[in-house]
Image 1 (cartoon, rainbow, N blue to C red):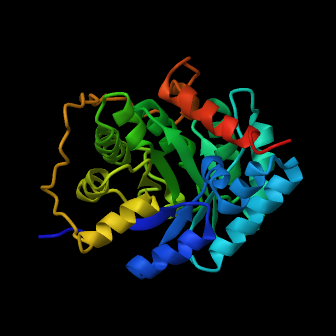
Image 2: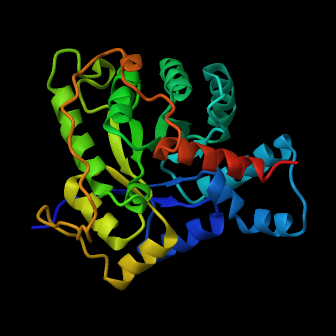
Length: 299
């Protein structure tokens, strides 16, 4: 018996791809963007090829325009990412978020899951914002997101990066599986439910960095709430006639090492979980890459 298909978000910053994806599968539930994807937008690539870079205002104006073009095609959430690095303060990230939140009707701000990002998100949610916590690579980060969003007024998204774990020789799907198990445990404990949402799960699993149909199908089988998917994977899915696996599906591990589940304790203080900088970690690598992608666009 097949199981419920997660919401599908397109992973792209090109409105033309938005239209193409809708034509392929008939709908889109949302879209995710980030600086790397903005850098690959055809208009930006042309400008960079001509040796032209942008001022910060020009870049933000362009990003806003892209988001608003996407919104004409997508009624669901559009995730927009702040410009962050290890030196960013919560105040700086919050200021960016407040501006970006005005770009559309259903904007989710992508904060990196670092100390400043968690602090900014926690405050942003208290003011009625919506978030997609990104660059998630560990259970500790996922635990911090769970407690940092306990007072949110709407569900938050958690984006574990599957493919980047695979790049390191580990099975990235284990991070999804382990986080879902931990969240179910937290949700059953006193103080573990978001009362604003009448006890419903307040963090939705958004499987990210999907590199293959194996990732796509495994995310469905494990019970992800949302998947953000690049165009090429959607095209492959169409080629396979939009097959949906059942709960027994297991993606081939191809020799990848397992990520072992950690029985972390529930602590309502999100700052109690270690999400600090570790040189060379996937978080450090990912944050530096996104920051570099922003910087290469700027004068």
